[in-house]
Image (cartoon, rainbow, N blue to C red; front, side, top):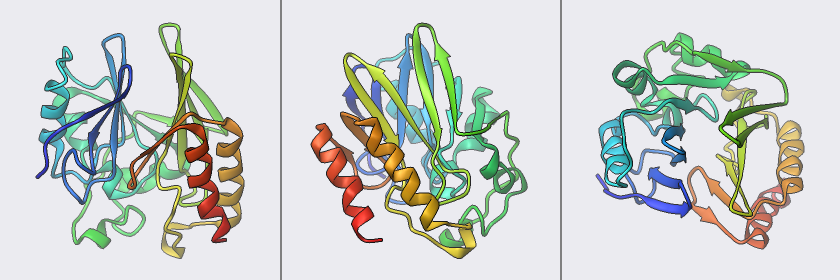
Length: 227
């Protein structure tokens, strides 16, 4: 088990995955909206208490996560959702097209079978709809974009803060699998949408944080070239 967190830009932190928790975990990112804490993805589940400790070590007034936004329905991103829902009354948010596997505990669609584990059926509190929804926190906005391809209900998010655009683009690289209902053509359109954002910082799901914007663009375009 690893231990630590990293501030990416003011009030935006890496708190799970990579160098922060367990190698099974996809990255989990925390956004502090003036004390309102929002978590993007939650790792594979075993590191739930470590994520909490990492947040506490940041010195934030941690009384819980108000919202957990799941970028898609795979176990390495959703695993700790039941923990946060049970112990912190966290609101769970996902796009409606990826909600069913979470709510039914579908071991194939959630890829739990890839990890030789199971995922318990978990209630979704809010289902994002359509191509673009905006979550408001005071005078700031967190944009939720439908970016299908890896899964039908994959989303990416972005936040503009301190003159920088921060993009949370999980699993840009795939993989693409028939069992996940992946769609390469949808994915290509989604990647073009992300390129058009001209983000300064990319917070990716497995391969780290990329900046400045030239590196963000290179990272996305590199995968597009493979297809």
